[in-house]
Image (cartoon, rainbow, N blue to C red):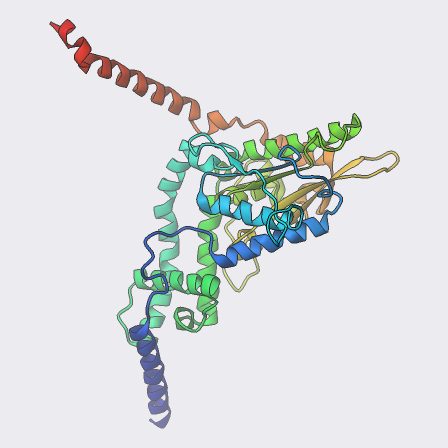
Length: 402
């Protein structure tokens, strides 16, 4: 009886603390009319990333800036273009004559949202949009038992009438407070460490199914970006082999986009896979879902696509006898990462990289994969119909109808 009373008092105290926090909570975003912009912490992170990249590759960034030498492209989304600007300000810091910081102007260009199949291939791919729409309800069903379990635990612990939707909303708030505001003693304090692990796993499942290895379409639609990367390397090799003078060929190709761009590209080159799993995706076979905690898993959203997440592919020229002269190294979030297609090495001979990692994907044509040709024909037919109707109802032609 005494033990039960102590537990009851403890539970009541926890419930009161939670209720007091909830009653006093005020949205830190109150008054904001729009969202989606790059926050100050993101600007700072990308600015210092630019500084670190220049320090890491001094020979690469030792030339006078020219947009053809250091190409910077972004999507037509303000947050992405702001990321490019913040990064380039760090990269070219103290390289100009503007203001006390000796900044310099630089060019950031972009393609139209409607036709950007290199950086916004997901937005132009009708097949992917249909796939995602069909799969989202299935993902919700997959997560439902987990949410039911956690909701029951929270109802019992706090005595509040939580629903699954309430728990989902509070988990989203926890992630926003922790990542953007560094606050972990409010919404996040609601969940136990084991519940946090399970909710993170549920998020990882969604990411895996809708944006990762869950379906081949998720990453095959990123082939135009992969081709663009390989093309830049081949051009660099040609410039070296033919002795191009400095300043007339591209030395760095920098692209800024979204998690929906980074994740498929990471999958195309086989990151976060064991060698046996890499062989499966090369044969276009499905992979098993990430295992439930406490089992270990390679696929974690916080690692594969964090804020300011990045992949860097660096081409090295090495003077070696009887072997490849050029090697590719992949850095994921600035750290070397193993390539299953290159026997687990982070350094891969360029020809092996092309043969083992790139070539198997090149049989897929983006237009066919994404129904772009059919979509263009539909738009064209719609435009012609619109032109006919415009002519038909124009006052100038009204007299000819009788």
